[in-house]
Length: 151
Length: 153
Image 1: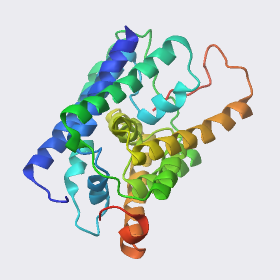
Image 2: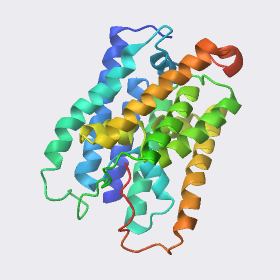
Image 3: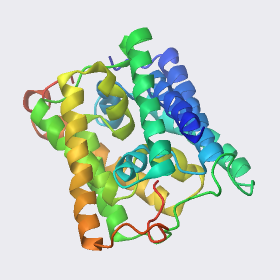
């Protein structure tokens, strides 16, 4: 599972390039940042055309998921945590990305792309904290025996 | 028309996530597990994406306006403040626990698996837990001009 092959490196780079293109397209056509947490969170307050744009992007994500499920089901991996841990993780991801104004896409792909110092700080922070969290759960606590899923 | 362009962007975004391995939580945790059998390949996802956006964003932002919207609406905040850092910390913990960030969470909903539903549901609750009190505190009946709202990242 953790095997690093030239194929996985190539796919990672190609997938990343596609993420960059998708974000650039969103900026070119809509004039906005394609940050998933931002598009998602603000959809609850948007009205009219802005709401339609946000829902369009979210529907595209869902449709892409459906295509992947049909044509490349191996793209989806098994969960790595028990349901309670996933629920906690999901809550923290939802709350944290709203408070911090962005996630891996908004601060990462887009924010770094427009050389935003705020985004650089956010990316370095959430990466460091995620590394530390995995270190604690896998190497200091019980790992899969506590958190479930594959190691 | 604008919704269609947004749809296509979202679709390409989802395929990029699936192609790159971001919808495989075990792979994400393998990347985040520097002290274990570290799988560095996902660094290329952010690397490849930022390489494209660095160039493409600069080109796009030379335009006076986007193709379909009247003007660019980019984040205006520049201060590195407490909410930014605390939010990133909270997000980092959640990402490290689950191996899932918001994009993959929404794309993985297509599997309808219990894990994907629980995660996305909890993410929705976390999102509203922040946004609902914010709205109530602001109290103002939605301003039509949206001036004080900082565009999303």
